[in-house]
Structure formats: C-alpha cells, structure tokens
Image (cartoon, rainbow, N blue to C red):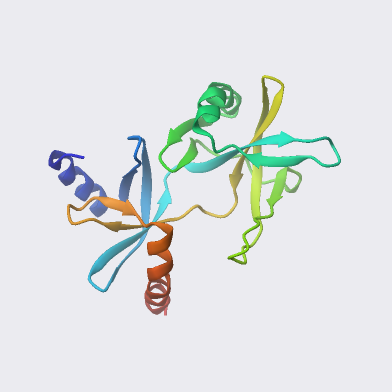
Length: 190
C-alpha cells in the first residue's frame, strides 16, 4: 500500500469502518465494533460488513456423509461462478473477499431445519460446536456442495501498524495479548 492511500484508510477508521487487505490484494470491509489501546498499541475488534459464508463439499454415503470445508483457492475459484449463480437466486451477491468469502444482501430467516452443527476438533482448545445456516446447495462435476453462513458473528482482531494500516493479529500474537484484551474489554463493559 502506498502512502497516498493512508488518509483514506484513516478517514474510514474515523467513520467506523476499516478495510482489511490480504496478501492477494483482496479487501474486506469491516465495521469497528470496539477499539482499545493496550500498552501503547491500538487494537480494533472488527465485524465484516457483509455476511461471511463457508462452502462445504459433501463426501461419503448417506450414513457416513461428511462435510469437508473447501479451503483450496483453486477449487473455490473453479466453483465460484456456480455458487454465485445459486446465491443470486436469493438476491445474495457472493464476493471473494480477503480472509473469508462473503455475501451481500439480506439473509433468509433462520429455520431450524436448515441448521448444521459443525463439531470442531482441536486437541489444544476446547471449542464449542459452530452453528451454520444453509443458504444453498449445488453440484459441480458430480460433487455436491453446500453454502452456509455461521450464526455467530465472525470477528477479527487487528492492530494498527506504524503507518496506520490495520493488520490482523497472527494466532501467536493473539494468544499473547488475548488476556490483556479480554481484561480491557471486561473493564470497559462494567
């Protein structure tokens, strides 16, 4: 990013939104949910403006069917036009944004029959199952795919670099500052 773009980013931060950019140059517009300073470093809790979505490939037979998250950029690129078309039938616009796929538009109301619970297996952390709402299914080359949106908000923690650019915290950095951030947020809520 060149310095000519910095004033615009600062204006957005003051207006309550920030644009994150990934290594591939894709952007993600986010609302600033909370801003705090810890030990002289400015941190922000960000919520994407558009709704995040995840695409899963269904594999196996009916009894042992398993949803596998599609994370390979080449596969996402290949199925993106089809996913975009099925979502457009619901007046949703699929976007290949930084850090997450998102959809613009009004999500359908949550229906119990359309929910999927994703059990997250991580030996290092005791993670709660994630509830996802089905938006659409489609086939591409005889593979069934499903597009879901999480019911819980997708939040990002970022810090500002010396140049004023927001930068996501690495998992290691987040673990290091998490207790300080939680304490600060807890104190501000009281």
